[in-house]
Image (cartoon, rainbow, N blue to C red):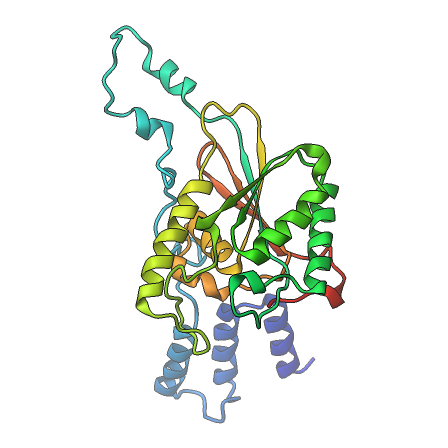
Length: 302
C-alpha cells in the first residue's frame, strides 16, 4: 500500500486532529510538502499552525477542557439545605438532620412544554390569529400523542393568547377522562425574552419590549419551572401550552445554558419539549421539539 493511501486510512480511522499532526510531520520528512528533508524551521512553522487548530485539551486527559460555571443546585432557591441554614431552632434537642430530611423534596416534576399549532399570521389582532385548518389537525395529533403516553397529568396550563388557548382546548378533549384542570395564564404570552446572541436581522424588537417581556417571561419561568415542594408525595406530569420563544428561553434557563442562546433552537408547531426536574435540583431535557408523531406533510414552524 502506498504512503498516501496509508495516511488517508489512518486519518480516516482515527478521526482526530492529533493523528493529523503526526502524519503531517512524517509526510514533511519524506518531502511530500515539496521541500527537502532538513528544512526544520519551515516544518515546525507548519506544525504550529496545525496544532493551533486543535481544541483546548487538558494535558492530563487529552479531553476538551470544561467551560463555564459548575452546576448550581440551588438555581430555583428551593434547596432544603439552603432554606434551613441559619434558621433558629425552637427546640435545642431537635435533630437537625431529621428536620432537613422532612423538608426534603422526594417527587420528580415532569413538565411537557407544547408549542401552539399553526395559526393565521395575517390577523390584525390576537383574537384574529386563530388556528388554521392544518393547525387544528396538528393539535389533534399532539392531543393523541399525549393521551397515548398513558401519563397521569395533573394540570394543563396555557398562554392566554388565542392560538395557545385554542391548541390547549383541542388537546384537552383527548385527556377528558383524566380530569385534567385547564388553567389560563397571562405570564406565558409570547414575547421577546432577551436579546439573542448572535443577533438576527429579520427580527429586532426595541429595548422596551425586551425590558417588559423579559421580566414577564422570567416571572413565568420562576412560577412554573422549579423542583417539587416537600409536600408533594408522587411524581407529577404537567402540560404547558405556550410559544416558541417562551419554551426556548425556559430550556436555556432550566439547563443553566446562556439564556441569550435561545434563538439558536427551532421548534415545530404542536411539538413537545419535556423537562424533568429531580428533587435534588438536577434538570434533564428528555425531548426538545418532538414532532415525530405527526406525518411529515403536517409539520410547520410558523
